[in-house]
Amino acid sequence: MIEATDLTKRYGNTTAVDGLSFRVRPGLVTGFLGPNGAGKSSTMRMMLGLDRPTAGEVRIDGAPYRQLRDPLRTVGALLDSRAVHPGRTALNHLRCLARSNRIPARRVHEVIELAGLASAARQRMGTFSLGMAQRLGIAAALLGEPAVVVLDEPVNGLDPEGVLWIRRLLRDLAAEGRTVLISSHLMSEAALTVDHLVVIGRGRLLADTGMTEFIDEHTEAGVRVRTPEPQRLRDVLADAGIEVTECADGSLSAAAGPERIGELVGAHAVPVHEVARSHASLEEAFMRLTADAVEYRAEQPGGAQR
Image (tube, rainbow, N blue to C red; front, side):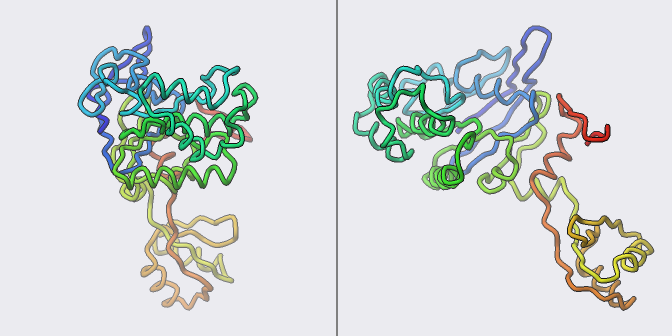
């Protein structure tokens, strides 16, 4: 388990992490989400002993990272796939890590195969593409067969095959009972992989809950309706006090349940071709929750802001 308690980090007058407390439990893929500047990187660096907290602490299996006897056997992490010696081969990079952590040499070849890098094992890392470097970073994180895995933007630079590979890998690691924490800005990818969410904004905890519960709590249920008479349906629903918006494909989205929509179209004899419950997205829920916690907000076309 990873356990953060009242974790705080200040850089001069700037508070990057502000009294943050949460737990990352084994057997689940936990997504660590937040807008840019939310404090995710600072939190992960404190987890791994790279930065010292101003206050509070993070414990992994009951101890701070710096006190772990065999860190690579306990925690496997990837924060920056380019933080390697460019003149060293992938094979030698992993061999050095293995030897310094008393990991058998056979494990080096196992993770190279696992990451799909067998053909590039003797290639210097300075020639690696971003995707290859990412695969190598994940291989290094798994070298010690750790019980805890921490990955920052794990699909960064990966091609479609690589993205599918990392999805399956994360699910498999969690199924083995490992503690898996991933940070990501890709909501669509997180929605396909993550079981539990820890969401922060401006260094503070905004949510610590399951994926389904998070989406249900921060989005509104709705129904998508297709009709050859959209304006008439709009009028019927508006008279009933139901908010309606038009979708890009010409269908209407109504903020009501399918039963209520069915009653209204039946009572007013409005022809419909489809009535289906719309599924809210993680992105929608995330944007709604973090709207007031966005540090950097770009201007949208036409001067409008989201």
